[in-house]
Amino acid sequence: MTEPDATPETPAQSGQVDLSDLRMMPAWVAGMGTSSNFAKYEEREERGPRPGGRDRREGGRRDGPPPRRDFGGKGGPPPRRDMAGKGGPHRDGPPGERRDRRDGPPPRRFGDRERPARDWVEIPRDIQVIIEPRDSAAEALAGHIRASGHAFSMFDAARLVLADPERFQARFGCAPERAQGLFQTTADGGLFLSRDEALAHLLRGPALESYYRVEETELEEPKGDFKTIAVCGYSGELLAPPNHHSFQTALIRLHRERFANLALEDYKRRVRIESSPEIVAQWKEQQRKGQRWVHAREAEGVEPAAFSHRAEMEAHFRRVYGDEACTEVREAVFASNADKTRLSQALFLLLRQSVDNARKHLFEMSQKLGGGFERRGLKLFKRRAGKLFVSRVKPRAVDPGVVFSERVARIVEILKNAHGLQLTQLVETLAPAAEPAPDGAKPPLSDEQVAVLKDIRWLANEGYVIEYADGMVFLGVQGEPAKPKAEPVVAETAAAEPEVQPDEPAEPMMQEENDAPPTAGS
Image 1 (cartoon, rainbow, N blue to C red):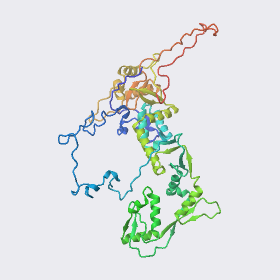
Image 2: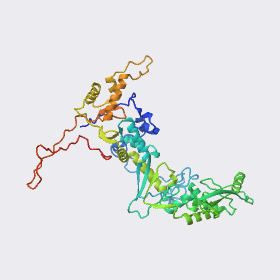
Image 3: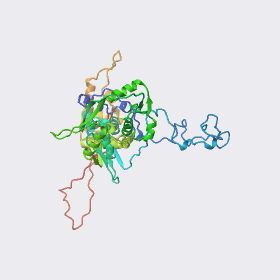
């Protein structure tokens, strides 16, 4: 028999004696069980879908589709007006040559000059992402549960883990039907869909420093009379004067490195020409500084190879490190707080979608946390309308043969009749508080109240009482322990072994109510 489903919803009261604050634990763990940390999350598991699904768009109308509008008292839409020649959308030609806007690309929006249009990214269906808690987060929570002696909701623990990417990780896995695996870079743990994408990431990121050493070089200032400079319309980077020999090379390089999702001709149309003398001087100053890449992994005693052009360095990298710089894997773990440039765009979208789903549906995360808690010796149980909780001891019923002191017996009797009380209310019932001071200050706990708190904590440590993180106190199990059940008598055949004699009774199978330890999925 368990507590009734209805639980009085009262705010957590102060005045609890909790020594867990004195232990060295992460600061985020100390807030476990407080409602303020989870105010921005909704208990979506306990709410059904909105009736009708249109209540916000129709001003509270929840039943059925929106009302149909009648135009002029007739059932059809209004007649289409000819807008040609009147400043309407079809003013760019005669009626016979009007272009339907739906046939072409969507209209440009603000910011198009500063940001290139994005291509649609197809999310792979044969790659699965599992969000799981990190061992460090599970260990910190388990230590707090042991230290506090309180029972915590598993959903609250799951919310706390998912509130910060440092506390969980993503496990990417390929389905059996996927022919090609994922490619993981050995330098920084990046994860990509193809080998070329992984190598391009290494060539453009800080991981390249583990392969090549970059050195600054002094070059001659470009000679010539330059009046204009070509500027990238997206990034604002200076390319070169249109009449300089490096213009085409700089244009193609920047397009390949940063805007390869655009067609080259479309990118060229976004290049603008600036004629400011300051910009020309700035470009000349940039051309005076060059770079060269020195191979950092040459054998001892061998002159390291050096490359003055980036294309030469990239060709050398692909030839020498193309196979060992990234490995093909079927499963990989990615830290959720890592730099998202270490992921393919499709994998990043898949990760973000999986994290959003995990925060909306907390059951899977609570399952994984529950398994980690059980491996660390904690106990899971269901109470208060079937919700899953975790504590350091398993709740148990009060054995009638156990003799309590007068005050402890009174605590048990009060909880048995009240079916749950706030801790402060229970303490004041047994040891009323002193009158408040004239200035309204709350008086300190009396010695008798501290003694009552110690008795409640002892009962909680033994499992006779459950002290929840929200301040509610219940009996561990309502009622008495389950009585031993005798084994059923089974008729024996003549060929069976001799029956047990009366002076050697068979030991009956005994099992206490709720004795079977629940699993994370119960």
